[in-house]
Length: 602
Figure 1 (cartoon, rainbow, N blue to C red):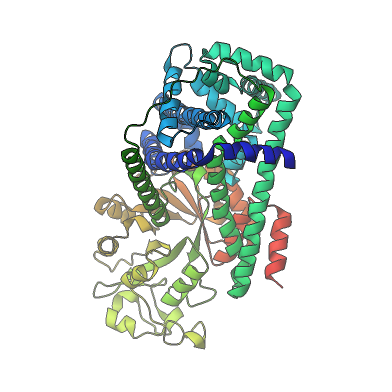
Figure 2 (cartoon, rainbow, N blue to C red):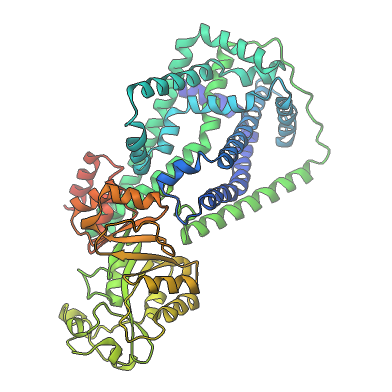
């Protein structure tokens, strides 16, 4: 295996500076262009079904829509065209170095384009989709690493594993029907570039080469995929050492497992993207190596004449400007994604969210700024709180109609002014440490959590308030917080009023008992349901209506895991750290989980 990598590295180095600059520039520019197109396609798919959240059940319906199918085919062909040009450029670099020609990046790109343009002839167009399929066939490990997740595992269990044996035979047969011809034609691009033949001739020649060297070629592809596995393991090992050391140094062992698993989740996504970026150059390096090794002399080399670069300095300036613009756009995308993940509206692309019930109410007095600060420290995605209106119209955070339980004063919220509320001690009932903790206003809470966590604002009408919904919406809008919160209530009329004022605010109907056909209620984006009444059938029914499912209030890790397996979208809990550990550990081996817990408990 060492010789295998040394030879590949030697061939890769022969591509020299041009290949490196091309890969950086090409990838940066591609992401800058493709990212917004992907978002546009995703939003288009959501709009097609008329929902705010694309559940797994709706994904199946969406991809069978003729317009969406057409859009997906166009996307597939675009990626194929992108990959094919990249392969031709890489092959050109190797060929120039092999023949010891000194050419610039622009010259190589121009010659590659002249070869690439021949693909669009009638006899050659099939090379476009074939190339991408061939790349997918070679990069088995990278593809599996990209698509495997808790959600896709659930989809696999729900749809594929339930197939009959006849369906399995068809699936296996079709897979082999695609895979085997793809491998047999793996040298088609090399032959197309060097011999200027049509696709049919190129495929036949590749077929003959592969047939005579089938074990050697297949073995090399297997070794390449094993190497990718080792790279993934090495990256995870390095991450583990860094994280464990960091948690120990910062004395954060109490949330060590959650921090580790959270970082592991982010890192896993990073590894997926890294493999996507390197899969074409890495796998095509392997193919080029095999081709040059097996076909040492190609007597039919028909490379186009190299362009005489008239203004090399200007071309370099243009390239630098394009790359700088692409980098700027990519950084902007990353910042925007951190502020608001654009894929949160698609179930298969988002994780189960954890909501801290009234803040981290086991560590600090409920519904106080102290509890909300603890919830942020505990990495909660959302913080649930309750709001009511005082006598003078202020919106304060308080669960009970009467403030006695948490403050010791026997008064109702609607009987008190904001000044009177601010004189209450909302911390002593919990512990002496929090003596003097005040009852916060909604405005104060938003200013505290903005940019750190989202809010689940439960509106609790008392019957004594006049404009509760209007006041809550105004506070949300004044803080530009519409996209960072959801509004819930047991009162459907209140939710309708919120929607009438601002349709962009997501609202959820809280249900103590789930029965009947409530799934298609208008003006409701999701349902917040008592976990005791959430069966898989109920979850599926709500998802089939294109709405999310929030489950409350769950503090048992076994129950959290069961709810996750049922497919809920958000779990409201008093133990956000434990819930995070359960959710993130679903995609991690049990052995690793036990090792993590051992490390952080000693």
